[in-house]
Length: 145
Length: 145
Image (cartoon, rainbow over all chains, first blue to last red):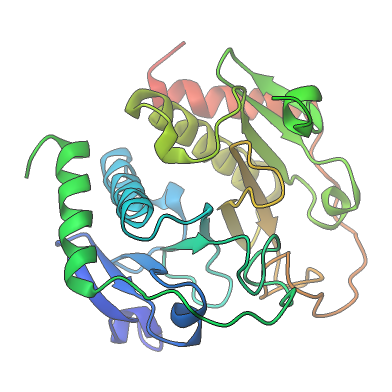
């Protein structure tokens, strides 16, 4: 789709992909504030989950939950936030955001105003660690492959 | 769980339920601003999607997507927003929010500051219409039942 930033660029550091979806590590300021923050992007330009056929929808959610599993194992957040909004970029993508009680926005959503200033003291997982953990969790969910 | 508002009360006007989940229509100011706004709540007190077994996770997402299907059919929004945050109430629940280009917060998330004042001119679907449309969409997704 002409003019769509998720059609014309990866949208972050690609840590996992197949023909249907990719996972990118968020590399801007939000990736520093919420270390491990990933987005799971459907490769084709569709807007809504219910635009996908059931098998595609299941595969995408398996991958979203594999990223959640990887983040819980790698960075042990206090909470995981999942969201598919797409108001600004209506190309189907999921936010998988690790949250901590002491992060800048907790307990509000990361799209709200910050609650406090918070030093970014936690280290983000490496792309390699994310890639391995996501692949392992997805394989377990989908029985190999 | 003692002290959890989603364990001690329905959390809205219940329009659909089974033993594992319920769908409530949001009846406060947000339900007026985003007519049709529903929450899908897991009945048991668990925090994260990856705390569920795979069959439960699939059933919950089938229901979330059935609500999306129902809202697209009943209120024809410009976009659907899906989110499981749970920072304030860590009892697993999904927000299914119909969005319009002229709504108060578009294109920001509904948790951000409003972008503009917007008269609530659209009528919310009735609980009966929601109930019927959600049940039909879930039956189609899960092959009867």
